[in-house]
Image 1 (cartoon, rainbow, N blue to C red):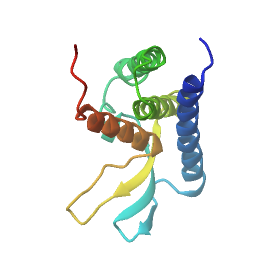
Image 2: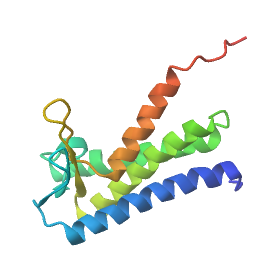
Image 3: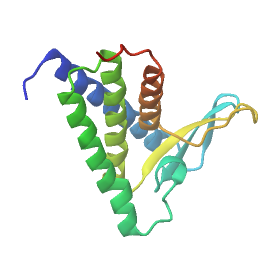
Length: 164
């Protein structure tokens, strides 16, 4: 693989995403007790330390250890590998698409890393806008994945040139 500005951009976004996620999780693990709730903006935006043994919103936490290994470690690693291969090979992707895919890969790797090293993923952000909008508890990796997916969805609605 030739090291181009494009390849450096992809790996830089992945590494920055992983670094930000892991740094925030270290801070949370070291300074917020399990179950402690810290208001940031009243009760609308709070920080807390929750260990999530499942995937998004705890889904899969009740799976057997074998199925958890398959669906929360092996499958994500394979999918992330295919996505990385795709973005490195597909030279037609624009910079914003590369950013989105790299953010998804970085967030995915960061959460897989947690599952391997800690056996769970540290989540800590919670938003509750008084019943109008409420999130599950999430982390920076989840935010990176969600941001990447949102960008890709928005880009999919852009008008594409007609094929000749």
